[in-house]
Length: 254
Image (cartoon, rainbow, N blue to C red; front, side, top):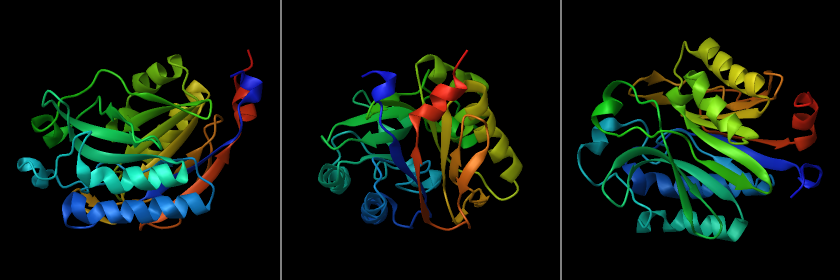
């Protein structure tokens, strides 16, 4: 596909307050919100970090809240993605086939295939539970290349630089930024977009979390580093935007 033939990309960032009850409680809400995004024409839906459980690391001490690629609890998400043609990126504690524990963004495609991307910059208690990856996954959606980042990854410029070198047009961050981190959030998402001449998008966990109250502010940033749509509050909200590849072309001219 030539650059001139790439169509606009409509995607949704879901600011999501995870429910108590782990994976079983949160999958139906994910399905409902994917349906909401579909009603706005989305082709790609990004959920926050650990959206299937919330940032409840205590739940991960046992095996019940970990998922794998063949987990039947994800079948409802597979089915809604097949029905709508949407690729949905959900946050989960994930076990690879060899048992390696990962903090993951799982891209569930309409075909039922799951592409897993793993957090590369773990911090705090995450280091006791997960193994860090070396680089993010880059999805291809309708000719667009979308790199997946998880929270603290976005604080490290080299992560987005690697994604840009891999051809990323969009830097999609699933995260938890809490109250008082508003400025930090804006700097991270704006700088990653501007420095690498790509769009950035943030899906932030919402509501109250074990790390504190969310600051909200999920949304979209252009390759000029400026935000052009953000959440109005700190609760669950679906934000949708249509990205134009011609905007990237303009900013990427030598």
